[in-house]
Image (cartoon, rainbow over all chains, first blue to last red):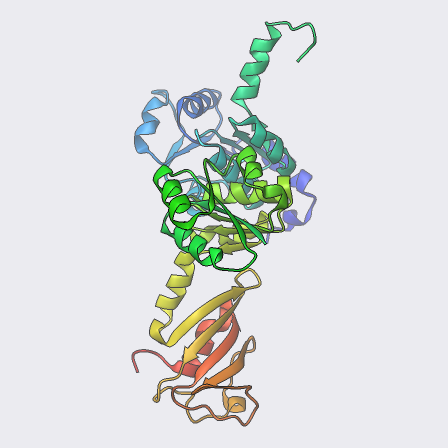
Length: 157
Length: 223
């Protein structure tokens, strides 16, 4: 194997994160995934978007210059095809919590992607997966926070 | 023993029916399917929760805190993984067992803390790939995370191992004959034991040399 792989994981992570051509892989091309892909592509990042439904790619910007991979992201083959072995970032944004969490963990453990983020709707699950070295982003918690900041309660929340 | 079955389909019904007959088994089923929930509770009289087992609160309601085992048997790998991880991580369930639909995910499940991951696809494809013909091989049990298989190989009269002594077989390094069932007797094989047609051989072998060991004993179907 590559001699570099004997070094500490954090060093390897840093190498991949600082590689300007290491791609960002986005799983799920819904409203959120398509927006992220289009914006990052505009920002001159190499982007690969994965969705099992080819029609979903219609939501991407007309000038989107990244790659599109059609397939089920719970299959290792599909993730490999998306270039997860070289990816610096993995953003998992499908509508299904359990799928996002599985893909995120596979990205981290099998493909050693340095930075993995997953959308998780259910805050109860979010707390659980912090234990697995996966950064979770919960729209429910974020939205609640935004509302609460504008709605003071005397006793706190 | 307290067991939680999570999932849907006929497999849940049949497993529940089997478990129900076992003494001291306390079963709770969690299924998202309303028709199945009704059938299960009417016909088997077991406790059924109609809900999504991938939500921690639902597993807790099903008694995850005191459960001895959780079986995740949905048709979606991501759900089975989530159910197992929630059971294990949040409720410290000692045994979490998952059905793996995509056989490539089997190893990943083990790495992510699932005690036993069972891939029906893989078991069936192993059986089909064996050139000896699957009618000759039965009762595969996967041990040590699928690395070791216990199989029963039936010797046809024309099989290459018939008439040979066990110590002359040149089985691969990681294969072993654990027993021979001849008529209704079980023989523990010694070096000089001679194999006969219709012997049922209990073969213990690692995944890597299973194929080689079986063709050495039973030959190929083409013969």
